[in-house]
Amino acid sequence: MLRSDDYASFNPGYWVFYVPGPFAHGSEAVNWCAERGRTTKNACVGRYVSHSAGDRDALCLPATGTTGNHTGRCTRP
Image 1: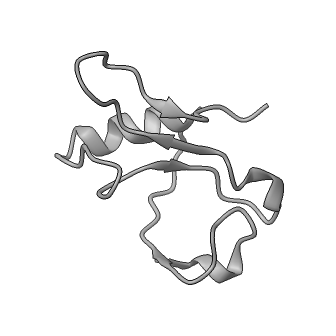
Image 2: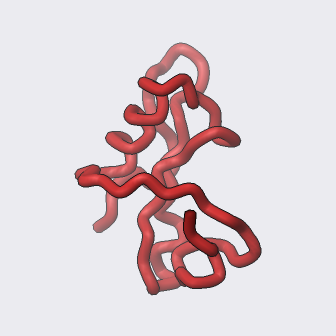
Image 3: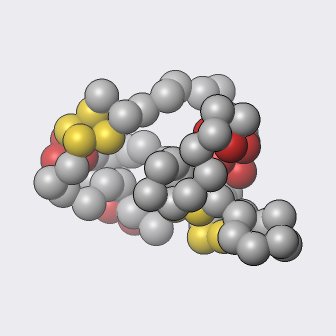
């Protein structure tokens, strides 16, 4: 468990359950969650953990509908 206040890439004020990778990108993390039945954005997201506020938008959300495509920023430039 991480405190979001300790990482600039997170919004402050939350407790975050963290699973260390290695995940090459956010889609892999979201797929890992889906394999465990966590398929909504309230249950699991792929998030890049860093001390840079510039990474705050690195948030990969589970696919919605029938497209099968994850949404958000699932890769880091």
